Length: 197
Ligand code: OGA
Ligand code: NI
Image (tube, rainbow, N blue to C red; front, top):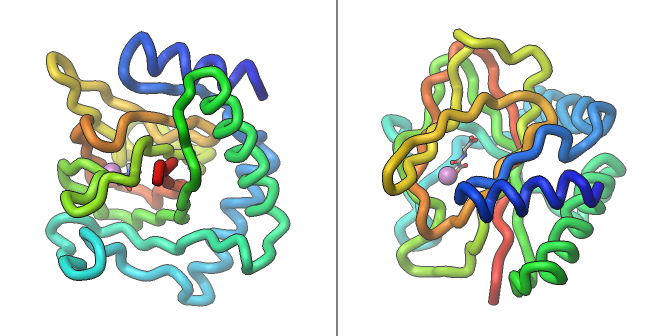
């Protein structure tokens, strides 16, 4: 696991975007996909909103994904395994980079065909607790032409990231605008934020 963590941190320091390809095992990824599909069939996912509390609104010209927050108090063995990896990563990040992460939040995200998320940053104007964005992709058969790439806009260049199973992306929530291109196939992920109080 430490090799993956090292790779995330090294690529982040070199390039502002941390990336590793096997952040979670294929087996755990498959279990999380099964969870997502099951929860979706039970109508547990809901249209994602924009902003927090007072300025929360739905705007499906802006984003069209459906989400479900992971909740540790609803015991799910695969989510517990996922959080074990996240806990280990946070520990590693805090120890090696003094990141000062104190908590986090994660949700499943499902982009059905035709869905997208327009250019945005992940930090709310009213609240700066979100320090780092983390996305883990759950698409075993993604190929060029399927769409749904993540585009990250750096100061002088843009990066295009394919949402392939097991890949993890890590970046500063406050600084990097990004968007999800329209997807031509179902696109699944777990997205979250590492937070500081
Ligand atoms: C987000 C987001 C990117 C992705 O949920 O805020 O930008 O690739 N997701 O899913
Ligand atoms: Ni985002």
